[in-house]
Image (cartoon, rainbow, N blue to C red; front, top):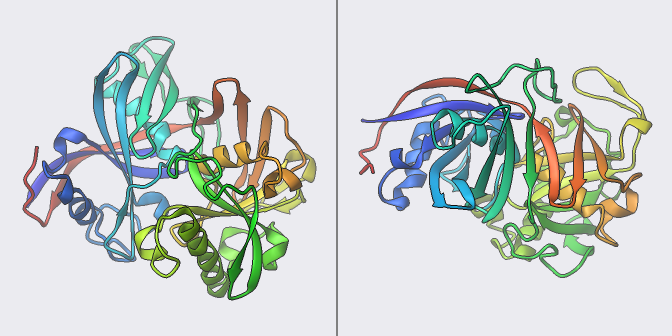
Length: 367
């Protein structure tokens, strides 16, 4: 077996395994089997690895110090499939991005500066810049604070993420098909969607067009509905050129992500808290790796915020508000984004959970 040093970190509503790139196999062709080995995939329980049997906890981040004046660290994200022998490197995870800054500071890749250290992160999946603002106290990352985010118990110190010029993150175009909205032919008939690529590509569909009211919680979707959602997502993946509609579940499971949107309505979230329609600008329910997201992906929130300014796009047509602050209601509560001249900003929290050594089955040639 091969021993590898790893760190487990929570970033936002996700949890991932963090590696220094120098600790990865020398041959990048071995990265996928190496990560599958470590996470215990494919297996729905991931019982023989570090994965948690959920798409939100089956994630990895590979970090390397940059050697240019305008970037501090390179960050590669991997979404490790639970059911397939697949690690999807196509897109980024905004929640895991929240933990990259603290990791880089604590690992000595970026010098700590009080009271706030700005970490310039180049996400290699999308070749886009993220600026993370991390609070520092007594030379150390400050994790304690009073910021709460929906989907995470307790509170923490705020980490501000600014996504710069994130259009065309995966496809190279804000509108991958050239259309702000279009109809896709599905087994359920023609369904209107908007495919938009900003921070990550999303395919938006209005809840009413697929027989939903938009306030459903993650646990309420049936297997039949999930299969219909995946068909729609797969057709959009083909439109983006990622894979054919028949192979997209296997070859491009993480992008695009499906987002079901609807106008503001009173609802009770998964914690039992009620929210009135005046607290939100848009309802959104996102799918992640063919399952309902328990909250909302950060890149999904960023893309949705940008979609509100795309004339003719479904989110722009039904959202209540197009101001510089956007409030998105999801299964676990409400998330806010801020539109700034340099990009779209969001606040997250993060925490270092564990440092240790992981053992693999395979014999990999390490760096």
